[in-house]
Amino acid sequence: MSKKTIPVTAAFATLMLASGFIAADVDYTKLSPAELAEYLIFDAGGFNLDEKMQEGGTAKQRLVQDELQKVCSATRNQPSPEQAAKIMADAKASIQYPEGDIKLGDWKKGRELAWSGFGYRLSPKYDDHSKDQVGGNCYNCHQIATDRQGGTIGPSLTGYGKTRGTGQEALRLTYGIIYNAHSMFPCTRMPRQGAKGLLTQDEILDVMAYLFDPESPVNQ
Amino acid sequence: MMRTFLAAVPLVAVMVQPVSAAPVQDPAEVLQALIESTDSLYLTQSEQNLMMMPDNPALWSMEEGEKLFRTPRGPNNVSLEACDLGKGPGVLEGAYVELPRYFADTRKVMDLETRLVHCMKTLQGFPDNDPAVKNRHGSDSDQMRLQNYIAAQSNGMPWNTPMDHPLEKAMRDAGEAVFNRRSGPFDFNCASCHGEEGKRIRASVLPYAANPKEWTKAISWPAFRVGQEHLRSSQHRLSECFWQMRYPAIVGGSDLSIALLSFWTDKARGEPAIVPDLKR
Image 1: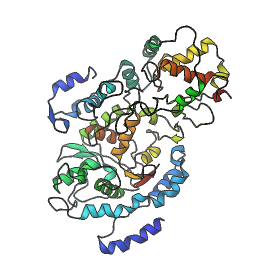
Image 2: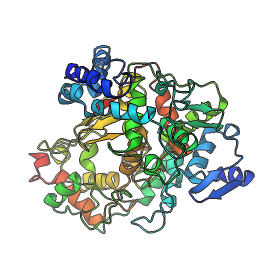
Image 3: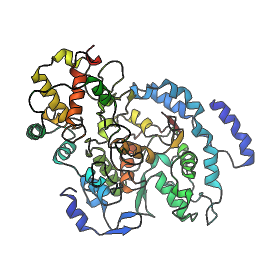
Image 4: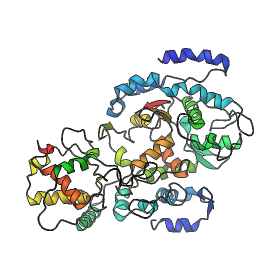
């Protein structure tokens, strides 16, 4: 829960009913839009906060914003130069690189990871990681190889390795973007695949093989 | 096919109620006029959907919805004709495009679903656990049949939710804050998908919330979801979005859901509702 909501919830009585928390005597018009949003999410029965998450704990934790999410939400993804510098520095510090040189994984595995993406969904169709891998969701937003249709929220990655080569500098840069894209693009919409534990290091290297390997359909 | 549908109405009408079950205008015509008034990849992405609109199964359940509305039901054995959806008891025409709105009797901002459930409980006496008020999803539910019929009485009318009461503004503004609030393992908010024009998730063109001509189509529920083969509500759409975003399930009828619906309806202000709609 954000600091702001603490005085709000403390200031007003809430009444617990069988169906959950129902607000009593809370004057919504006295709260700022952001305060009321927090109140509706955490204290007025808006979400099923008790659901168990795949990563442990309850869904309530999933809705608590970290610093990056707060700044990017408040600025509508347009951080000030100072905020942007801090976001990029923090994101860079979060990146855990493989030991030694970056070695590309298996582009065929990377291809499937780039296409799949069911992981971490909650009810009503809950992902327990048993049927499918978590997946990278890459194709949702990016065009990558041309044999499958990708989205357009992110830039096209077709021919990615062909234009960049496979030098360590290009590999380290790309690893960093996949691990935590805010290191390069503060308040980007791209998920923090490594920093949030969505993809493992090996999976990132497989996705990178899909992007860089000259044999990969991405570079054909 | 719309003609066939209309032609079938008088036959049934002899047996049941006075006919007003058909939408005031053909939803397909409302959509067509919208498409012609602008240049939108989102509105034009599915030729197939446009062609199927006259055969929309949602049109067929209209009479069932009207019957449920006008027949005395529930422990109190009364119809819903005394239900005030915001424009006076029993007034359905144009009621839906002015929801969510503030209701003095409950001192709450309510959407179509919560207001309808309120009427069914207070007027008809349905208890909380009765399927009539408890089951809110699926073509076979009383809720969807009723919502579909009531909403269709606003087809073609511009969204025009009142913002006179301070609570209506507070809910809309909180809805906007939630819409832009990033959280969860993927850092998603609603704007991740609806914050830019003409963008696609894989093959699907996404509606842009700041373009009311696109947004009216996006928020026009009830709609028959072809992929799910069911009639779906606004509340159901909300739950689908949050599931995709890896959030926990939103509680139907919660103030959080009403705040989001207040904001999203406000973003379509002035553009015509297409109800019932047909969606993929």
